[in-house]
Length: 328
Image (cartoon, rainbow, N blue to C red):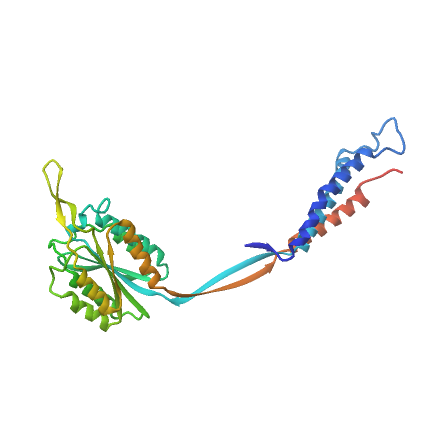
């Protein structure tokens, strides 16, 4: 970065065009003192050109001196970031019901997009990802390399598991197992589902008690409109999808209890806009403590300008007194 310590000196540069115009006018008005029928004995093309250029060399030298007086400096800034990030695990339902089209194009795609935006905002946090359907597994451990998390999110599909269902307890327990040994000051799980626990061998409330034991806060999100939602049921041989309307059955009481046990909060998202607002609310509730210290160093940069100006003035003086002959 480049700056000037005394920039007001640069105002004197405005005088240089006026001085250049004055030199030009002076050259136009110059008249010979003596008249000769032939100037060939004294004529020298390069000397004539040099005599015309010397005033402008002097102006250039003064311009460089003005810049040197303004004290150009090279500014080096370094930011030291200190703080305590939050370990966050995203626990996402990828059961077949996430293909319901009450969100456009469907619940899963919208949830992926909103989760990706959330990850982008959590610049200093470690983030991991767990998915569940009839079973559960952690796709990505907590990491500060958010590109990896985003890559896994973009690849989420409903056919990751052979066994279908909604194993909320299994998904939550898997994330707790990943976070329990974390030394982060704050540990958070964001659990998103569109149904009720109907699979797995770990009850959701047992998993919630485990989260509480390890000081992990759980935010739960129920995704889906009220009533019925259009969902692809099967595919014909020609590729045509057959749809049916299915009832939205979110166990809000269970999700609320999980959040209450762990000190978190339950949210209901009935459309894309509300879902984005839910993640925004969680982002505001879980703030990362960051301290940024800026260290500034400067180095003087006027030496080249001053040195070149002195060289030009010396050359101008030598040219005037040694190379250019003037006649009275």
